[in-house]
Length: 151
Image (cartoon, rainbow, N blue to C red; front, top):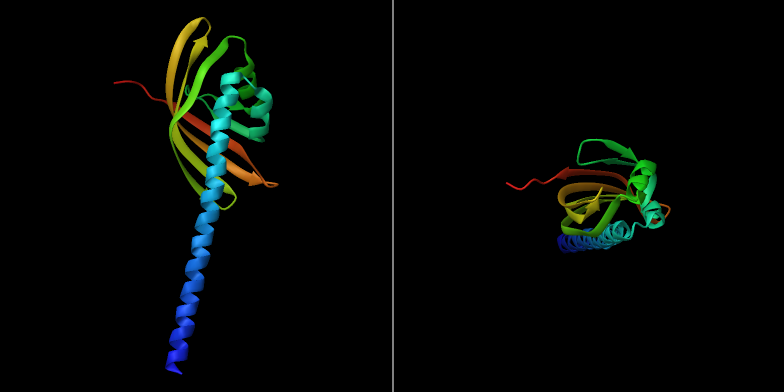
């Protein structure tokens, strides 16, 4: 009887460990998808592709900009579309992600360079993006950025 209990306990432990490994693998797959969307976001900014950005951003999207102002989705897209905003490069220098079921948080450094109002600029920003999975797709619901100043 004791051997049977030990075998049952071992089998239960294996089942639990397998379930945990599966959940971690699924989270890793979802994290990879979201990181891919972050890269698409950058490409859309470079191309000023507001249609692509419209798909990536939830209707309730809100952005806290580097100057502390808050933008709705429509305001954010209007800023990208503005003729005086001319990004030539938008890349993430580093990113980390944590997936929590149907939500994910990405923290990273975003670097963008280009021309705005006739002046060249390069900005490095620490960002945090919050993504939600709805209807089998991921959309960003919130983004916050802080300008990294050189010392």
